[in-house]
Image (tube, rainbow, N blue to C red; front, top):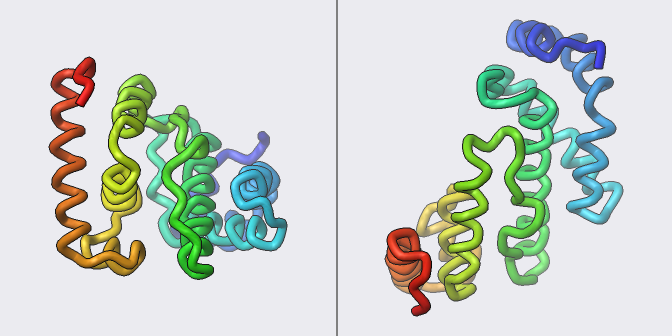
Length: 180
């Protein structure tokens, strides 16, 4: 791409709207494509694309060039934004909240893809109700109260599932061949 993301982000940090337009022109089609794949709906994918570039506008210093390419980072932001939106739509409509899935595969922006894969594999070995609260708490940043509200569960149940899941996960990290 001819647009230098480092220079554009520097200009965005100074409030330069034209720099955001240039960044949008260079990357919006890739962000939209990913969002469409996750959302399965053109209108929602457009909203996710707008949300991603709004995040870039609000926090242009978030990208760290030492941790990966700009495009990988931006697509990671897009992926998480889309999955978060998908979950919000599920909660709003009363459907169950989807667990982390193929859209949470490691990317170039992840510090250690092998560790990411190992953790994902161990998480899949947990019971669904424990895996779900761990993923929403640690990967999405929901508090215990937010988990209880989102999952329509008592706060004590959320805490119990989280504690039990973390204990099982810790045991699996220590001994991955354990078949509890």
